[in-house]
Image (cartoon, rainbow, N blue to C red):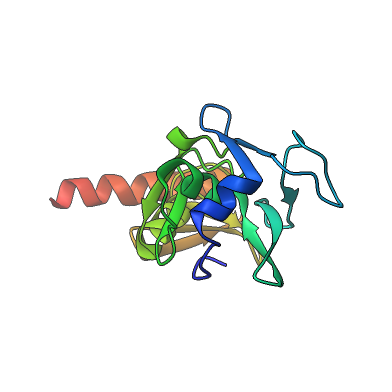
Length: 161
């Protein structure tokens, strides 16, 4: 959905209001599934809010944070990624969104896994993966062991420079 163009901003502004302080988008027009003032967005399995919009006779689903960006800045972020700075996928406040390339967004994603420890990725296939700046350092059975491996690796890197 990142590469998919949004409907024109004028059309989006007819449908929705965006509060940049709260990050909430509400309806301006009543639809079959909602009335005026209702908050839009359905939570997907990946943790992002989405909304379906019928435009030009076709119904498509779009990320709510992309629509918020477009409503606030008046431009479609197509071709660029939008990063949630605090990594909370439902926090669509404008101060929490930034335009990034896909490479920058992936770098942010690999710096923090779901365990919320920098450079340690989620428990997967028997261990926690330690991955520092595109270098696979190793896999450890426990989070504590992975933190120890990461810290040793980083200390060794700092003494070499």
